[in-house]
Picture 1: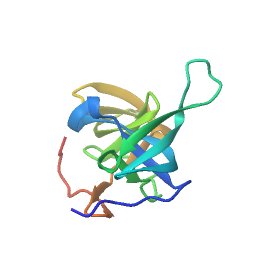
Picture 2: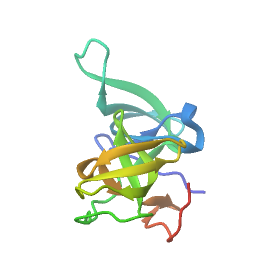
Picture 3: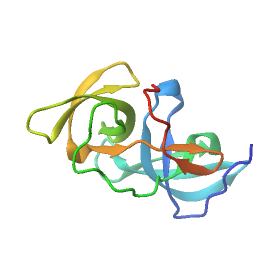
Picture 4: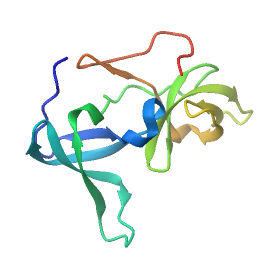
Length: 143
């Protein structure tokens, strides 16, 4: 499998090891390559404890992907739409399991096996990064 190369200042998403296959993806920027398919990244949504800046970390290319392209978000999500939900600074994979009556809130079953409520603005359609290309997942629930 060809490993992606990233330039300084490239906008990416990074995943933490600890979360396993149900991991969240966090917006980050490449600061600099540090050799051997590893990069110093800086998160753009996770601030340091003293709130003076953003966390930085060295990551390998297995845990880095380009940011997904902006695709049109539907005016309303529907049952079983595969989505990413923004929670605790990262994007978590999930599926819509209930559309609430006010149409701007949804119950999402996350890949972490939790059910949570999200506003429309906290969701995006899920896309898979496969072999260096962004693809829409095939219909059906794949958590």
